[in-house]
Image (cartoon, rainbow, N blue to C red; front, side):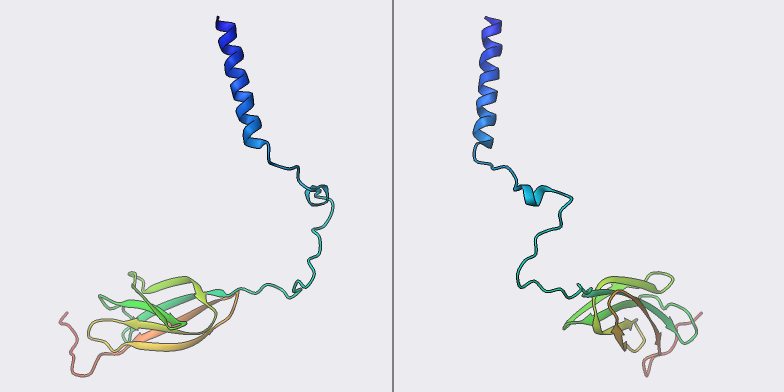
Length: 143
């Protein structure tokens, strides 16, 4: 009885495998060979692929060289603005920034917002140093 059960389970499993793989074809031999180059596609462009994103580091400081509390840095590209809190050292690196004309941004409470135009090259990193100036009519906090 046990042998019959094992034979039955084996046949069912083999049938299931056959059913699952019955419609699949063998890969084409000319595509499967690692020794042959890929076939040429008619009309394909031979131009090199260029990166469409770059890296932008935004550094924020006050005139005195400090990072103001509550400072934010960001960038504006392709009609989209991104803001993030500035870390303690005042430097935030953005990756996947669209290449071309980009504006580096910095702001903090009590300071004027700074916007600096950059031409971000593909494949290279760029760094913007943004110096915040006190907004008119504000006084520095007491020390």
